Image (tube, rainbow, N blue to C red):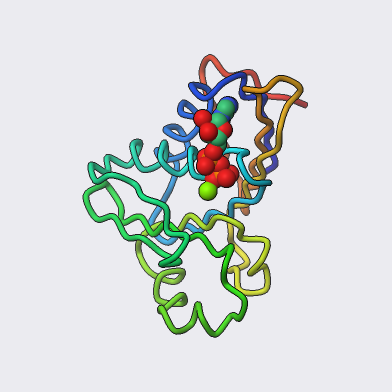
Length: 155
Ligand SMILES: Nc1ncnc2c1ncn2[C@@H]1O[C@H](COP(=O)(O)OP(=O)(O)O)[C@@H](O)[C@H]1O
Ligand SMILES: [Mg+2]
């Protein structure tokens, strides 16, 4: 199932992230792909809020992964931008995270494409025509889908 929305502003991104959080199940892996500034971290923060995470979400750029355990499901937030060798990921226990009972959100996931499980939920973010606009696509591995009130789906 492939879905796409136009996000008119950051509030739309937050709405979508909260709805995505409701749909997430233990073991889900969400690959976030999109240029710098398209909202991968913003979306992650909204998903965290939707899961009920109360900790402050910080950027895992230098640590590769940050864990949050205060929500409905454990959240593992990855930023693999600076990972140059897959071994760096195995060293921090990537497989335990990915095949664990929490949810993984992976920024710059296209850089580790070959390490992603087949059932990965693929989210792509891109800039829209206006400065605050973004276009988001979600490719679900199965028959899941989001139905978001107040947000117009495309296509
Ligand atoms: N519709 C939108 N959705 C998400 N972020 C937006 C939107 N419009 C503007 N922004 C801004 O774009 C930036 C997104 O940054 P960030 O989430 O860190 O992106 P990334 O992690 O993809 O590099 C933030 O400064 C945010 O305020
Ligand atoms: Mg980011």
